[in-house]
Length: 258
Image 1 (cartoon, rainbow, N blue to C red):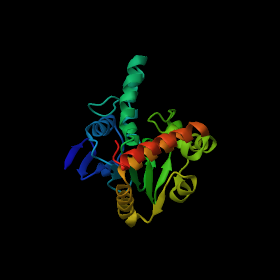
Image 2: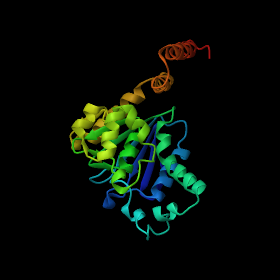
Image 3: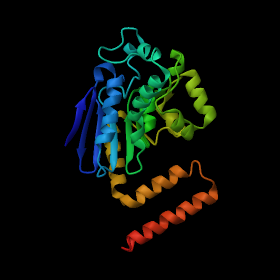
Image 4: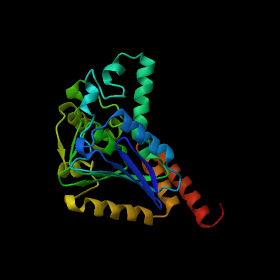
């Protein structure tokens, strides 16, 4: 079933899997406010029947980051430029950036698992979009880079939290401050990539991971995801109590008592 096809984003849903594809290969899937609004709309349209969301991209690059036209006074026709945003009142700027962030937040929904299949460049906003997903399968030619500081900007699309969580503060600072490329092999060592495969196996490897996630009992997977996410900020005893409560719910459901 086709759910959406606009502004460089195509979304299809088959059984319990939503496939979100970036389709502007000619511009290396450079991101625009219109694309962010389409991705945010995707999150609003996905029903609770979806268990796995897979993010793919057409062409040689996953996403080369922000469309540089947005950094010019002329901007992109019909869309807000960063020059326009800079001149807006503070409350309007904040609300606008928050609306852009919506494109990056729903991938971490508690009721589904999201996978980014990354090939080629994932730069800036592209890096942050890959980080928005729970898991990342990468082709051997994948390259991540956070180039915002070289433009005088900061990563503002939700990427700083997962990046620090995955690689730690010092490494995250070094990656962001230098803007250097993190190639696939290093990404796997650092924990940015769950799996690295030859480029011609990226689709198959992503499909295999999707199938493995669908094979897990859904209630148990949802509870486990919630526990692991909570473990990043809860103390040991609080986490043990959360495990007990979650297991109690699972036992009752399996016994048909709920």
